[in-house]
Length: 250
Image (tube, rainbow, N blue to C red; front, side, top):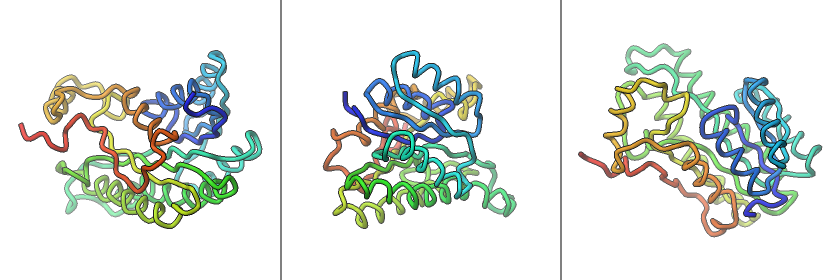
């Protein structure tokens, strides 16, 4: 198993990419600390993983709370003895509106959820990884703000682009410590965040070279690559798992 005896924190684990990744990491042998705001959904996921002989615990909270970021790491250490992997996946689309129409509170909420939370995660996850002289820290970004842009998504794009810059600095600061830092950039994925409007899905599908949206398990497999030793010489990267939307012009 690719993650046998590894300890991983996964945020945004109650649904979508985070939930799919939690199930996959568990099957690959990881011991999981699962994070999301919805405690009931987390508890259900823990039960599912344990029923399949996986190992997981959960702590509900809000990723924009610095104390919560620390508590997740403390739980990993107390429950499983340390931390090897941080898949910092939780985020928000925020309010979709042109910048002149966006209120300051909405801008700040989107950046806090997508970017401040990454700072808090790194601040507490990396010291725990230093204790093991190895680790993989991963952030979920987006092709939006990197290789493309969509109207009304200025706050989202700015926050997701910021994750790439943060990743690069973490990679050079801690590469000699055995810690790798990477960003995962999914394309359109069939998650609750994407809604269930068929017409919207059809539009999104046309943006991809593959002419379809991803299943969350496909993005989870990309996260597994970055988390595992399969990517042992990969750090500071912005890994596109976007179905070719970055290069599709028709």
